[in-house]
Each structure stands twice: as structure tokens, then as C-alpha cells.
Image 1 (cartoon, rainbow, N blue to C red):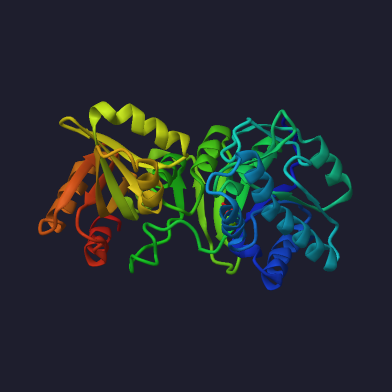
Image 2: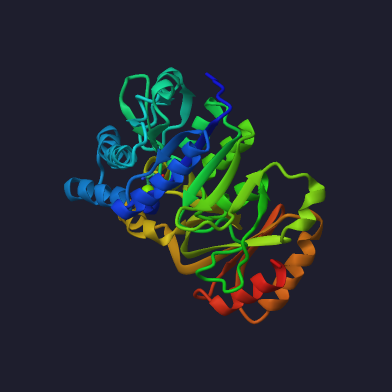
Length: 389
Ligand code: ASP
Ligand code: MG
């Protein structure tokens, strides 16, 4: 259901932006500034700091295999703490604010506990509250399914809540406040010369997220593209300009870097005889283990996975001997804004990496290389500096 309020602005604040009193107050000041300029604010929030991880640890003390309905009841409490604290902080500086959980805000999802998709947002309650309040604080990452049970949307799901709410309220723009200044040509913690990107197209951002960039939840960018919601990624602790994710005409590509680079470290390859593939694949899917890539080589199937899943995989297949594991791999992906030069870029990368072993390479819409050696940051910096500027 769509509504329309032209002075409405949707903001999302991530876990670090609301992690303590001081941060809650600076977020409140950001919201206050918009209200003072005549706007009404919808703020979607995540759980404070590492609350969600802590809640997961609590459940693991009881079982490694919790009932997913109950897990969602537990995990959704993190966001509920944030909305109440932020509403109280706003009220303490004189702003008419109210908090709403996902279900109170009318967010309905499919039945899939722990990875629920939003089906619809019934905006009546939000619209009613907007009559008497200047700020509505909504719990991200959660909704309600048709059984009236709480569901959560998978890690990082608050971004998706924020974009979906923007679409439902017909807000043109969604401001996503986080702890970095925007989207960079690579992770600035690893790549010295990473540059902030001013504007990036939906498709390139989707590719970056698919390749493992953490800055935005991938589902949120797909949703933004579908509904034409422009996303701005901003830092809640600085006034620096951020990154806009929007529809970009091809002619504008020249204004932006040619490519960006995404690094995924600590991966492993699971090598299985193709014939056993179905059995293993089904088990992996059932246990919600994320596969980064699947490819086939002769009569083997290879799956690339994050090393966080290593123990789980070994537990799953204790009695199954027909597989091999190859540890300590890194995947470097280059996402190009200009498809015409993708092979040129690949040639440059081949030159830089001529002395190290590339185990697999994929060149199509983007470039992915899987390095057999341990993570080599000087090579990655060289690749970045040669192709992403
Ligand atoms: N609190 C959830 C998580 O940490 C959802 C979110 O932050 O978007 O994954
Ligand atoms: Mg979080």
C-alpha cells in the first residue's frame, strides 16, 4: 500500500550509530535538524552494537540447532531495545517521537523464519502516528508473518526494512547512516588508496554486494532498484558527503572510477565428486550455509565457502568421506562501470599477479579471481591502484 507525504524523509541507523547514549544523542540531533527544517522523519534502526551476535551466542548456549521461530523471537528483541531508547532520547530533547516494532508498523513477511522477505507494508498505523508525531522510530530486520509470528530477515536486514518503508511511503530517498563515509572503490581498511565513490548505479552496487561488499545488504539494493528509491550512504559521525546509489545514465560513467574492488578473505573450497553433489548441496541449503560460488571441474563440483562455516561443514559430513577441503583462499572481484574494457582490465590484473598462483578466474560481467596463496595485501593494493582509479 503506498502513501505520499512530500515532507517525509526515511533514515536508517546501523548498530554502531545507536550503540550507546552518546551515539543515540548524536543520531537524535541528526533527526532534530530535519524536523527543524520542516520535515517528518521515519527512522529505521538496527540493534545496538554487537547485540545480535550476543543474542545468537545466548541461543548457542542452549542448542546449535534452535527452532527458527524461537530464534526470531529472540533476535528481534535487539531492535526493540534500540527503538525504545532512541524514542526516549528524542523525547528528552523535546521531539514528539514514538517507537513501533515491525508488526506495529505493518511490515508483513513470508513465513520463512530467519530469512523472511517483506510481502507488504500496511502504512495506516505509520500515517496515523505521523499526525501527532514528528519522528517515528521503526525496528528494522523484523516483521510479522500470516500466523502473526515475529520473523527476521537475515543479517543486515534493517537496510531492506528501510528501503521497503521508503518505497511504501513513496519517499524518494532513503538515507542510510552507518560508521563509514560512504561506498569506496575498495575496503579502505585494507586498500590505502581506496577512494570514496560519489555516485554508483544500482547494478554496480548489486554486483559489489553480491561479491561480498559489506556496506549495504544486497536485498536492499535490489529493492531500491525495483522501486526507484535513491539510497544515500552517510556517516552518522561526520558531515562528509556520502555515496548516492541511483539510476545512472551511461554517459555519466566517466565521472566515476572505472572499477571497484571487493575482497573476500578466509574462504575454503569444498571439492566433491559430482555424483554426490545433490546430497551435499541439499544439506548445505537446509542448514542455511551461504555458498559464495559453485563451479565444476572435470567430474568434481567445487563450492567456495567462508571459513566461518568450516566446523559446521565438517560436523555435517563426519560420516561422509568423499570430499576434500582446500583452506585459506581469497577472492578478489573487480566490478567495472564500463563493460567495454573488462578484458583490458583483466590483462592488467594478469600482469600484476604473474608471480602468484591464481587458482580460478572468472571474467564476464565482472572479474573474480581466487588466489591460492594466503591473503597478499601488497598485490591487492597494486591491483586496486592500477585498475580502480
Ligand atoms: N541487527 C541485525 C544484524 O546485526 C540486523 C541489522 O543490523 O540490520 O544483522
Ligand atoms: Mg546489527
